[in-house]
Length: 493
Image (tube, rainbow, N blue to C red; front, side, top):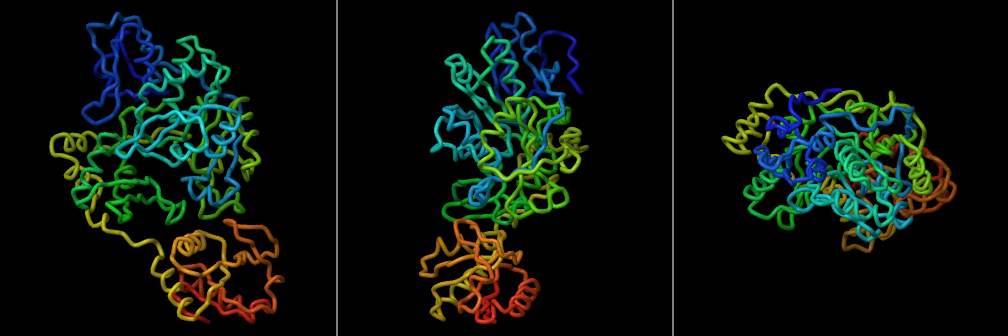
């Protein structure tokens, strides 16, 4: 593992630049010599008042980047996981695994500590009821402000309450070190660490929001770091400027340039299968090859069960999950093997950012384009409007939807949110199975159930070639002989 080389027990200015901002050092310091402030790059980082430092070394003992904490070397259990309810899975930004764990933990009167989006950044909050769980859902691709959460967790644990803490592995390790050094009972502390690519600067993100606000001439709200409107595999951000929703890849490009990441991320000691959390979660990239039957547009989580506590948490949540045991080599997650590589232009980028501002820096080094911020069309909206208008012109009020996928989900949401009398009477499984069941709360009908009946079927695909193939396949089957077919261009066949 890469570690900081520190010749003195006193933290130096050099180590402040390579701080993850977990607050462990601040909370264990006996003289109050350490505070957490934003550095020149906008990252939360330890700041030391050397006049108060007594060189006791407690800060180094609490620092993940100075010594290796407790990790789990035992062979883990690895799963592909999906939340059972597809609506809930669509509201998550992966497969909904965290939601399942959080719900089951709350049902046992536990307390959650996780990250919410504050409107201008990310911060840790305490959640004790399901009605507030929405605050923790979704990924936040920036470093989070820990605030006084470590102290709150200490109070909860000392009061005998169960606590589930979720965060980047450096934050998880920092919390565990603090709890151990403060001699707080650990029995009721459960932890979830994330497969982490690295954390962007919250200061940079704040300036990015200001840039958007100036360009759009309106306040920016409801920023979504990974909007599933376009599917799980598409990483596209969305936000509102006033009442209008915009989509953009600009911040995605900034993120994946790796130029915006904390320098500590490039020597991350947690980028391996040796984990610090009871459970590790992330995206299960490569699911189509690993578990083909779980590959769909709604997302699949990677879940690594590392400890007995993690196994306990997984068992509590099983009734909410679809899952299949798999192996680490089947999932494509580079940060389970190595840290993200530091870009050659890293120092040049930050020099430009500090001296010239965010727009010249991201334009020159990250491919920022103002035109990207002008994409406002809902994915496929014109298709949905075509179909709605055609159905209303023909006086059709009841339809069936063909296909189980993201486009069908969008069609359902469009109909539900539109001022229309059109009703969806059921769904026809795009895999041509005869099994019943439900999807998004609508009945899945078999061919036998519609055989000989009349009605209108909407083929849910925005690909004209695929629509033609599906229409031809359906018209060749006896069960659909009496049905009108509408494709996503709004034409009736």
